Length: 116
Image (cartoon, rainbow, N blue to C red):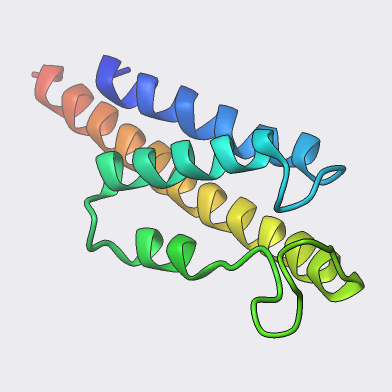
């Protein structure tokens, strides 16, 4: 496997797996904020800042910005947070699947080149 792709897959899987731990937190928790910033940075690094996956991730709010004062967490905040974590997991799953397909295609091409 291409080392660069292997490293990207490792990072993407780690960020995706972290979502399960984040479910018990909320959008104000430091651990969530750190994860969100790293996820955004890595997506831009791996996909390019203008890629649809990056835009989809950046569109996730993880809270109800219209009705909740910043000092309290509403039931709606909790609902949106959970829904957006699921959407983030779906984004990571799509990227991981794409990376794995690319790796498979590359191996098939290399295999054909080696066959006389």
